[in-house]
Image 1 (spheres, rainbow, N blue to C red):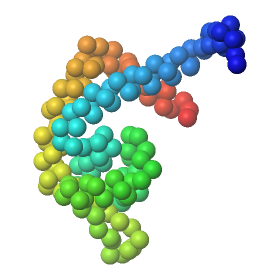
Image 2 (image 1 turned 90 degrees about the vertical axis):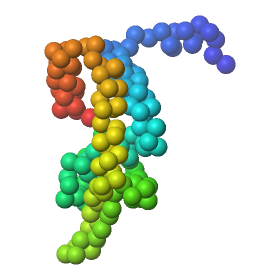
Image 3 (image 1 turned 30 degrees about the vertical axis):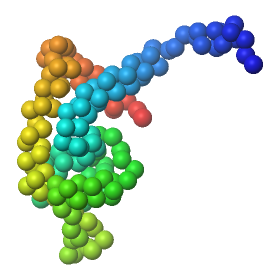
Image 4 (image 1 turned 45 degrees about the horizontal axis):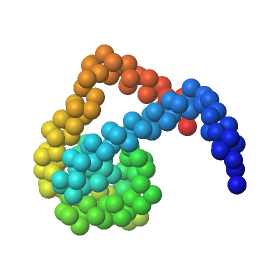
Length: 154
């Protein structure tokens, strides 16, 4: 069993600035996502389902299911099950292409568009509550920094 002194020495190390920043980003992302999740909960929608609907709203002609997976904000290992739930609710429709029966296309349905329209303002308001205090210039700077982080490595 480790003594309290050994635990103290083990836990009191100084974190590097990159580690501190990583942890701050994780904490912030969690807080921000919880705020939006509360809005989505009223419509019995998960953040990943909402993300799929937004992706499909931007592609009215539809997208191959695999392409949806690559455009997601957070990866969902079971995109098929996610699409199953949305299709069961009548929010999307899937169909096989005539030229290539292996390729399944997904399109947003009218009900999915109506749901997103109902959510647009409440989601925007959640974002304003969470980030509006920063102001446009700071938000622009933050966005530039976050883009640089994404470009810099994985």
